[in-house]
Every structure is written in structure tokens, then in C-alpha cells.
Image: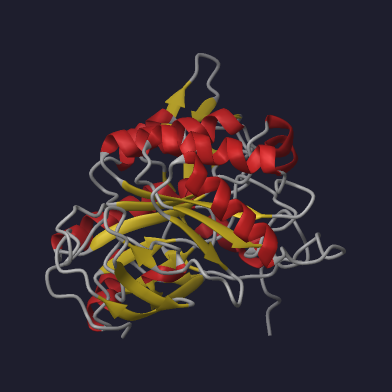
Length: 359
């Protein structure tokens, strides 16, 4: 039996030329990738920070034609609570990331090529097959997730274009470390995005491999583009859980719009951060209070048993609109985009005849 090729060589076969909008040619022949906020200058034979977008013979090659993860699961798991509640999403993931978070919960796929302990392999597929899989499972949404979708945006765009032809909605679960060019490239292709705002200091972001300003600018720009966004903060003890930092995040989200949901989720020891304990419920309760006092209409808790803030209430009359347990919808009273009791508009992507509960 012939030995298996090194993963780097295998992945080099699952590539295509970058979308023209996501690569710039410099005067010295170097290519500048603009798929994310790093805006890497990539010389011949080299790759960008993500390690998956590389210059071969003067052409920027980028990931395409495979998945490393593929599941149908509730849209609430992304988490996106104001998007077709109770419906399923076809979630596909590729490999690689432009960050190196020590608490990554998807490190097996995101840190491939960066960490020898991260082992995941591509499975060949095509855009038509993914769209058909969503249709056959009755999932009205396709989401790029698991790894960082910005670094695989070129191929995701091809999938989303075909998905839109079949009436499906499309989204990203992203760290938000985008460039203006990639957001322009995705305009009209994304209906929704779940965006991580991992901390609120540049010192914190430097440990993850990113720039805070890039993320803040991306969240604001996505809102301007008309993309439905929900912001997620994994509350990590000793990293980003001070009242000052949580208040800074909440105030920023309010400045974008008080209607943007903020998910404060519990950390569980993972990857290289296994010495500390999980986020206590009391800390998530504190974050919820900070978010509401800042003026946010919707603050949710996640990744923890016993939390009291996973339901959706009308901001105007406080009527229960959607009752959840974990990722599952137990009751959905929304019909269209208005509260059934007082008629107030509720922000999000709704439907006139939703399922009574998660399918």
C-alpha cells in the first residue's frame, strides 16, 4: 500500500485560483491576499498567515472542492436565535484559520498545518452536492462554519450563489477579522452572520493573532450591508471576563444597534487552556446584567446548564416569543416579524408559518 501523502500536499490539490476581488498584484510580483484583515503579502512559493492561501507560479491558490465537516443541525447552534427559529441549517466546514486561539473549540480542524496534534482530512465534494444535501434534508439555510470561513470565502461564494438559485439563505460563523474587500465580495451573498467578539483589548487580540479594530469595523460594516448579525463572546475566566471589558463589548454592540443580539457563552477547558475551570453561571449572569444595563434588547446565555436567559421576549411588552431548551425551540409564537401580543416589530429573519418546535 502506498504511503498516504502529507496533508499539506493533499490540501494543495483541493484548490482553485482566488476570486479576482480577493487578490492584488504588487509591483515586485508579490501577491497581496485581501480575504481577511491580515492582508498578507505572499511571495512565490509562500503562504499567508492562515497557511491555506498560497502563491504558486504567480497565482494565489485558495481552498476549494472539499469539506472537513458536514452536519445538519439547528440554526440555534450557530448561535443565531433570530433567524428562522426551529429550522435546520446545513453546516459545512473546511480547514484552517487566520487566528490561533488557545481556547479554540474547533482546533482539530482550525489548527491543521499549524499543530501536529490537529488531524482532520478533506472529503471531496462540489457546490451542487452541498446545495442538494440541504434541499434533501429540508434545511433552508447553508452556513460556512467550524473553521474560519473568511479564508475559504472564494469557494463559499460559489456555493452560496447556487444556494440562492434554490431559495436558500446563507451565512457565516466567523471571527470577523475581515477586510473591506472581502465584505464587498460577500455583499448580496450573506443574509446572516454570527460574529465572535472575543475580547475588547488589542492586547487580548494580539494573543489570538488578530487586530481588535478589524473585528469592530467588520461588525459595523456587516450591519450597514443589511446582513443580520448576532455577536458572540465566549467568556473566558482570566482573559476577558472583567466587568470593564464586558461593559466595553456591550457598549460597542449598542453603538452598532441595540437590536443586535449578544450571546455570552460559557468557556469549557479545551485545546491548550485546560488548567482553569469553566465559566461560572454567576459570571454569565453578570454579563447579562451588564448587557441589559447598556441598553441591549436581547442578551442570551449559552453553553451552560441552568441558565435563565435562553428565551426570546418582546422588547416592548416582555411577552414570551420563543421558548428554548439548549439548541431546541420548544415554542415559537412568532408569525412574521411582529410580536403576537402587542404588534411591536422584532428584528431578525422570520417566517409566516414556522414549525411549532425544532425539527
